[in-house]
Length: 346
Ligand code: UT7
Image 1 (tube, rainbow, N blue to C red):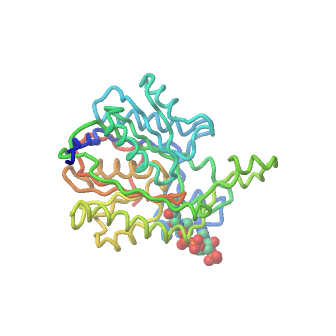
Image 2 (cartoon, helix red, strand yellow):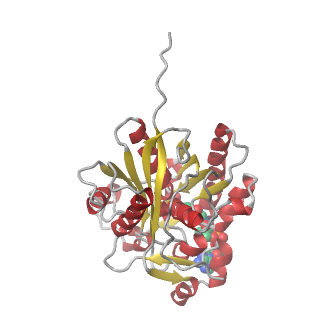
Image 3 (cartoon, helix red, strand yellow):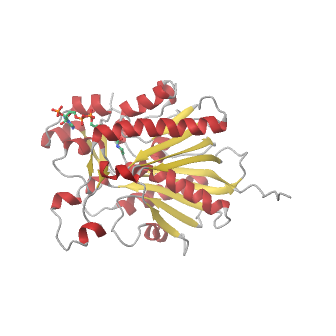
């Protein structure tokens, strides 16, 4: 005899918000101190501008603002768990999430960090959906926040051209799979053999156990751009295709992918047979904000009308680890505040 298990509770997107710091850095400003140009950055990456935190600010400051906006969007006063995706926590220990929860007035709720670098937001969504499915939480605030400006080498023109600071958040609530906003399916993966393609070499147990101080540069972020580009296209395309097949969607209405490079977005769109208008891009305005990237792209797309209620969406991310992950949902009807940045340059 086989017992029929009750269908697990679905996690439903009930609110969305994003936040970026005030200081805008355009390509011309970078070119004043680095051997680069607006033309190179625009044509090779699609990025025109990124934002950086001010001295004294930290990842938690952006996370709190994004979280506040997601709660407001949902019309909720609080949440009963918080998952923060970040690879630039305020400090290595403890996690940043409990401080964010405290500043948001959530009380003594479970709060923890998830580090999957640029895939962090999708991993955090899946983790939060698990908390809801098991009945551990009714409403989970999921925040992706990073401040890569704090770990880039000042003279690394490649990474400084791409990365910017920012945060985005969604509030998930318990609900039913049939509701718009329900997270219908996930695909997650990793390939640790390729960890060295994206890393901060020093500052962890391996370097510290040598008893030797690491050179300052080893505390900075490094990325091997070309192989990472190829892995990103391959993994995000395959992961998205898996969800499309399992949902029997044929083609989704919109793809909201990690915003690293417009050429990556175009290549993934081509692989999946999507038109340019189906692939959401906002990296021209904010750069690559790591774990903040997908919710910030969602917030921009909703507020400027590129993503509408009822559209079938796949979210897909790729990043250090290597890691990748995707989620499928039908977009719900939510009020979302515009990001506090200027419109794209003409
Ligand atoms: O977010 C997590 C995952 N990250 C990604 O998905 C990023 C994936 N990678 C990329 O987006 C691209 O590989 C980059 C934007 C990082 C680099 O673009 P690329 O077209 O792959 O350039 P490249 O690394 O192959 O370098 C080509 C040339 C090199 O010069 P030489 O050796 O041909 O003389 C670089 O030194 O471009 C040079 N270069 C630059 N020139 C001007 C690299 N960065 C710059 C720059 N300005 N900022």
